[in-house]
Image (cartoon, rainbow, N blue to C red; front, top):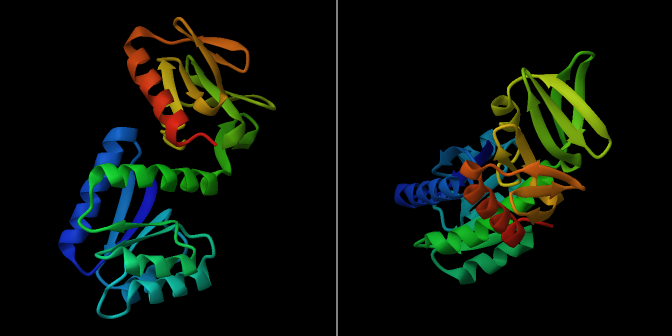
Length: 236
């Protein structure tokens, strides 16, 4: 689940962005929690670095987007800002505040999808930290980049990582909710693999760090498409 802020005084523009994010959700299965602000002063009153993505209109009556971006940078140097504007000439000024990108209204969904590939890649880099799992001894914090795949066995899930295996008493469905869906994908009902560790596909097998895991027939089409999308737009 990614937290998204949309700051735009035009409700129609806000709704267009929500539709575009829904389009991305359908393409990637990534869920978005969206907050809408119709002016930047109200947004700044609530801003405390909780947002993964900030879509910021440049031309607003109370305080323009560039002024808002300047204030954001005083609070958070690495917040991911994407400017939304009626004219690209205004967006160029946004790079002074280290905006990731800009989108020109009216928004084209295909162009939006391409820009979101870059944005989500940046989001996941920023979120690249730890995932917490419950173990018999308490809690274990695992770095997402080191998780190769997750295996379910009865009532337990085993995290196979680059520095060892860790068991947690939980369902696979619950565990994968805390992982980025564009990167962690089911190859069959018992395994979720980290696509960054895929070395090869051989017949109905995916090879992860030398280990062969079965790709089930019901999952194969989606798995291969997700792998293709990841390699095209998200892999470092």
